[in-house]
Image 1: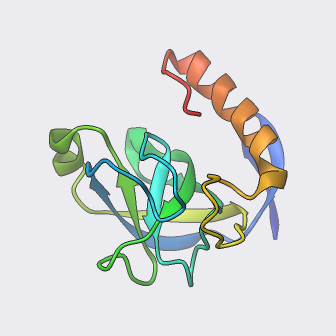
Image 2: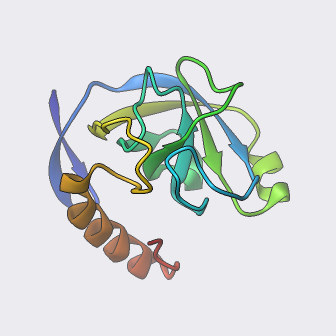
Length: 140
C-alpha cells in the first residue's frame, strides 16, 4: 500500500497497475443496479470488485476518480471501460494504456449502491469539490 494525494486528500492506495482503457456510451442500468453516468467504469469483477473506487492516470483529461459499477463480456482482466455520454466522445477516446490504483476495494454486491457504504460520503464530498472547481455537474 502507498500513500497517494488524490483531490487534495492523502489516501491509502494500492500499487499502480497497468490497464487497458476503452470507452463506451451505452446508457442504462449497470450490473451494480445504478444508472450509468460520468464517473463510472465497467471492469472484470475478479480484478476490480463492484463498488471499488479507483484512481486512473494516463487517460489525459479523463484521468481521475471512478466508481466500478458495471461489468461486460468483453471486459476481461486488466481492462476498464469508461462510460461517456456521447458516442463521438467515446470513439475519440479510443484505446489507451492507463495506470489504475485501487483507492477503496468494493464488496462486489449488486445492491443498487455505487460504492461500498463506508466510502460513499468521503467520495461524494471529494467528487463534489473536484467537479465544482472544474465547473462540471456533480454525479450522485
